[in-house]
Length: 379
Image (cartoon, one colour):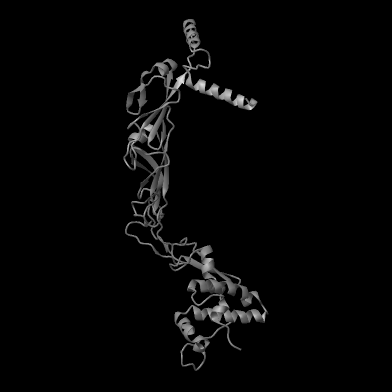
């Protein structure tokens, strides 16, 4: 009976990489292993086929020969190849599934130097600080490399040695039934080495908990959600590795006068109705002091005035934003008798609440209302 194609046996194709072949083998071997199918001759036969295909296709020389000559490359007396092999029905699950359980209980390699974690510091700024820029000192609690042992964890002049329990591998194998699993060595915690003479300062950890003070230069024009990155100012790496970075996250506090939108500033400026009607000049605030703003006659409430170059300088492009002032016409309160009389006389002079001559918005509004009802009645 002709043998099945090795690639078909494992459910892969002839262009599959070795890792894909190993995955397919592990999946099928788990299913058909004799220890899990005791007395099942078909499973035993299937397992032999799987193991045979796996041993051929994971050996580069054998795979090349198989791709060229097929099964004849391994027949006795074949002139195409000198390869020979034998198969058994037994296989250690630790060999078959070592990589799988290695991912669960440890990767089977010595623990390497690991870069420290990045840290984040949340910083609140006033609008003035964000616009003008400032240098701030911050205190950061973190794990830092021990200066006494330079992160090695050993006393000066003392070296770490291979762990006697795992012989420097960092992993130990434990047999559980037909499983052989590997897990971190409890003696060295997976590092593969033990410290004979621990550092007196860090007690062998290589890092110590410590707070540090940093000066952070805040550039002018920075805004909420911007970040400042400080290289190597994060947590110290394990086993002497490089430190992480520190990210300063910016949040600008709400200002009582100004609102910021990108590089422009907005503010509301109240004026009385006589100023709005007759015009004049008022002082408005900026972040650099006061400036004069000319109010033209007959200014309506909500009118927006732009003062160029009084906004925020962009932290990226360097362009200067503007200050936009929205005037709000206030209704006078706490009137005395004389003021009430004068306002009454003024209102009479307008010719009623419609204000056809003096209140253009009122006239347009009431004319529109009249047309609406006329059309509704069919006039």
